[in-house]
Amino acid sequence: MNTLTLTRPDDWHLHVRDGAALAAVVPHTAERFGRALIMPNLKPPVVTTAQALAYRDRILAAVPAGSSFQPLMSLYLTDNMPADEIDRAKDSGHIIAAKLYPAGATTNSDAGVTAIEKIHPVLERMESRGLVLCVHGEVAGDVDAFDRERVFIEKVLSPLVRRFPALKVVFEHITTAEAAQFVRAAGGNVAASVTPQHLLFNRNALFAGGIRPHHYCLPVLKRETHRLALVEAVTSGNSRFFLGTDSAPHARSTKEASCGCAGCYSSHAGIELYAELFDSVGALDRLEAFASLNGAAFYGLQPNPDKISLQRESWTVPAAYDYLPGDPLVPLRAGESLGWKLAA
Ligand code: DOR
Ligand code: ZN
Image 1 (tube, rainbow, N blue to C red):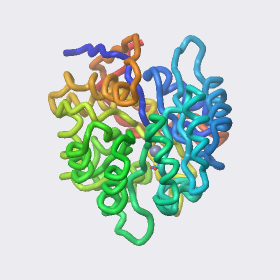
Image 2 (tube, rainbow, N blue to C red):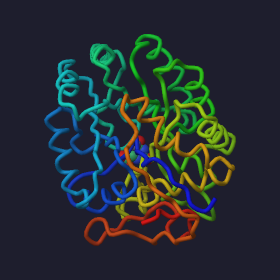
Image 3 (tube, helix red, strand yellow):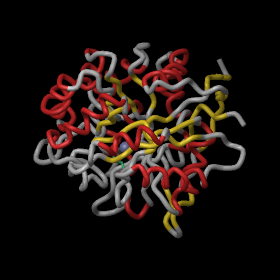
């Protein structure tokens, strides 16, 4: 098979930042994807419906003419969010989810939730109004960095899913066999997004010949057994696993630094990277469900009406893209070749 045509995919987990950065990254996503769920961890975070709608307008202004790409918005949960904000969000028609960042777990999570009990009234409202809970599934604090996802399942996620059985929950960017197994064993209201980097790389990629800051993201890459479990999950045909790139742009100077930011930029090849992975395990026939159907179904939306085509053709990823003035963006697989190319 040298041409692969599939229903236009969606990206169910995307960071596009704000201001000048939007013009640099939004076109990459809009070229490939019909919709993307935009993460709210701006500085300051997107905590109200009014902020989310204004942010949506700024993103739309960065969508190239002729593209029908639609940003879908999320709110950032804090200890103090009033439950009525959930009603405003739902009634806006443009906000489909709220994101739980455990305080201190990742980039711009300082305003996140310090104890899950604090948001029980908000979760109850989300459960009754049908707003999806997206979860950064790691505990913060002294727990070993490679164990934070597993411990989060035991301490936070299992009890939460038991307490709110009708709440729709997306366990974002899963990285471990334990997370894949948790989702498989959970009921129909629990799903997971999976990134390209966690499918393509294990933690050796962080240390290949020296420290590799462009492979550093959170949750951090895990060992090979976990990568294999994720590949198994996304190619298994289980509809509760779907595409979420977690493409997270950071300017080069903030990645290549003594304390570098977490995040891999992948929107430039946001479907091609997955095609490469599915192809490598002989599962290209499973890519469309994972990339274009499963996520929409979980969020209660129709698939996109149009299609995209990929060609088996090698191309070289640029060493960097323009991003901020004098401070470019280094993409995943910079300077390397990819075997699948988006057809014009
Ligand atoms: O690697 C990451 N980058 N993980 C996150 O959870 C946040 C993201 C970002 O915003 O840069
Ligand atoms: Zn993210």
